[in-house]
Image 1 (tube, rainbow, N blue to C red):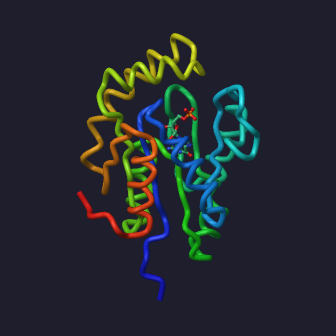
Image 2: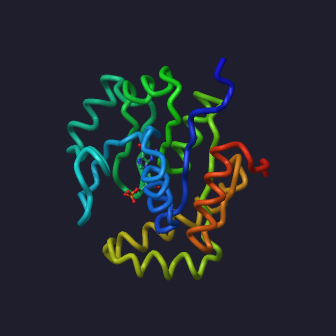
Length: 189
Ligand code: 5GP
């Protein structure tokens, strides 16, 4: 029997470095399954349809909610985001190591559905450094940055509810810490 958890949920605040960490893991471990979400947000420069997200209209997203096609979904920063149900169920059934990049609401929903899943919160080293990184990222408009900061302050309060908290001070250290969680060598909080 496969007793190792195979569902890992990674959450953070916007600009917390989560996407960079996930990209590094997928590059090193191409067998990992990454759940590509659907979203109604506009694509950013560099986003690739079907790799970063499936970009949907609000109408199409709502149709899929009604049809029960999401494993979980949430409204984040004014847009819909959801995990397509069939592919994640197939990955779980095939005992693949699955990574999900979800906001804190999504992390809670999946943890409730699958208590054996492992939740990891990527935390910036300080509030000041986080805001500076978010602004420096340059991918969001002023209004969108303000909204992400406002939401992020609330999300940071949720960190203690995660199985693990990884502080992303130096990126290489954060990647190493997440790997040690995935390979079962890091102690729980
Ligand atoms: P971004 O627009 O910056 O790519 O993502 C915004 C937030 O939505 C991030 O916190 C990201 O983790 C979250 N997110 C992405 N996909 C999903 C999803 O399928 N479900 C939920 N609940 N959150 C998601």
